[in-house]
Image (cartoon, rainbow, N blue to C red):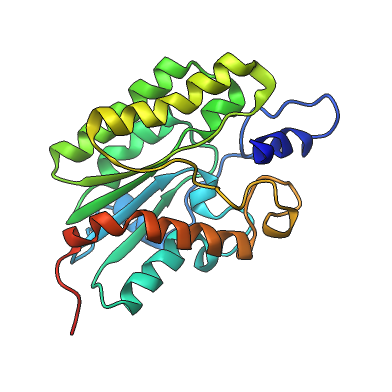
Length: 231
């Protein structure tokens, strides 16, 4: 929660952010994601990280974003897998839902679903956010894809009821669909100026490395979906 208070404070006195970005919407910086958009399907097992700028790595190089670091670590561990960074800055859950179908093509074994931050900072309806996320989860499950759901937090601007209802959405979805659950994507990073960029919102290189390690820990129960590691 301290991290979310920081998100509000970062905008200056009296200002309320309308988006987790506070910046123009950008397309994904990931070459793999752009290849998918062109219809080029990667060979071999795939993990897709579907998210917003926290996934895309806004403000840092794509090589330092957490999906790239996760893919590197898994390959170092012997997993023959491609991790696709399908993060787009500015995305709400509705925007993520609109591009989910083409993001989940090929031999996708695992989906890391990390959306909702922009919904919370805009004060969008919680029930609609839940519906959007549920549809993405259902789409993945219909294709035999396992899901790691990464929770988000809403700032306190819209009151404690909204904040609590927002937080509950992720736990409810995890319980209802029996998902592997990471309660907060930025746990241990949000609110720490040493781990965030000057905007107080987006992780810096060091922060992204921590996110990558925590995602790696959270995804452990799903690694069996990738097959055996190289000897």
